[in-house]
Amino acid sequence: MAYLFDDKKADAFFHRHYSLLVNESDMGCVLIGASAIDQELTSLFDTITPNDANTKIKKRIFDGRGVLGELSSKLDIAYLCHLIPKDLYLAVHELRKLRNLIAHEVMAFKFENHVDEIYTIFSQMNGNLIRVMMNTSETVLIEQAVSKMLDLNHPIDMTEKIFPNSNEAINYLLENPDLIKKLNSHKLRIAFAIGISLLGASVVFRKNLASKKFSQ
Image 1: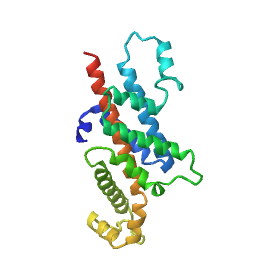
Image 2: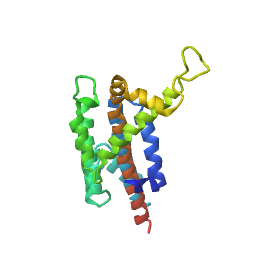
Image 3: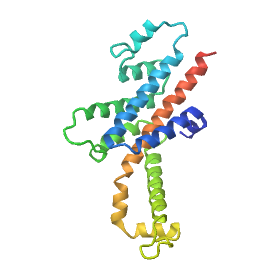
Image 4: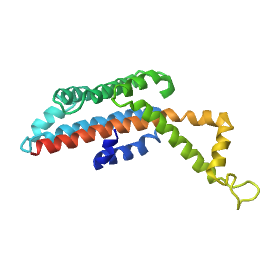
């Protein structure tokens, strides 16, 4: 999916939404991520709508009770019209199911309780997206932890740092499994934020392709 980052708008979507989602709660990450993709699908259809289409037609179609009023119908029609590929279609449908599941959650929503559903979402995508998500999230976690550790001042001599370099900080992490365990508790959210941002960026990429095609 590296081609997404060659598209300026898709790249901008990814970085903007990753920064947003990674700081949300688990529930917020799902709801905001699904909403962002829903909006991009609406934008996709709006992009290919004839310029002379009047407001009444658009309102009737995009209204909550209209043909394109629901995320599921937008996905179905986008796929049937060759606007999005099958893997993206299936992945976002699974995300939609997880979003709907939240409405029936009695306990606080936690990613760790829905690992199977998360796997199902991203396993639909071609190119082993799950491996990319997990490897990248691990790298991000370590980089963030090391960066914070390098900023720690020595408790006795405030002019000195506790960890003089990255290697010592990393070795300290590796020697303390409890710290690694604590870091891993954030890994799933980072991975999910990466995955959702990539799905949204994929919709943006397809929207740009459709815009070029229908403008000819």
